[in-house]
Image: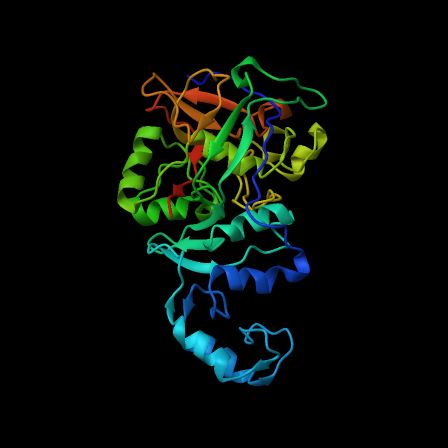
Length: 353
């Protein structure tokens, strides 16, 4: 059985590792720090980039093809491009790059963009084998636990005491919950309860933590730790909701839950994203994470992975069945036995670069 151990606020401060970039200067800076010569930002310097450069040959103020910034695209820029030919540094061998630099329209916080750029890795990729879209979460330090409640709901004991967590490594996390189509493509069947015309784009559900291990083994993906999940969900916020609000009435724009879901899951990506670009981290389905469940410690921790053993695994984020905004917040947590599978539970995947 699930235990309702939920909470509200949880403070999160992402450590910006480089100077803050303005939106206007981000694109050229991101290319320079991501991969010199990758003019179309696909993670590879190849003939497509050469074509871009040759088409811009000559005077070219401020254009990406002018790699050395001389105001002219010429042989010097061509030499730089040819010298960097091949796969960009920082691109994982399992990934296909969708967009190297973080999109300012999505990652609107300059400090978050700067932290992503500082990793030298692409922001938006697809896992080549599964085509699951993933976004980069940079290293950082945050306060994990319930810092503040919302207008209607206070903190819960399961989310206290607040404690400092440092994640020293960047990681990739699924932009959306794993869908029924993605599960069926790999596993050959669909365990989900909800079956509609748009079923392929709904999150897979009725999957236990134990069952998910087969999907992970087949794909090389993994579940995020509880700390990684909360770090990604918060995206730099300290408030109960990742729109930087304490107002429970704002939740409907972020999450599918009892008040608006119509007693069922909904296709992924239908609600507003957080400041990293992740969708549905609140609502739709509860999400399994890797950790065993335990009460929090007040001690500062680095890369915590939960207790070595326990009787239940952690679930995060709330689902379509939750009837109060106080249970669909960034710090909300509950648990279930590893073999527990119901139509309110799914997951999203992570991967280490």
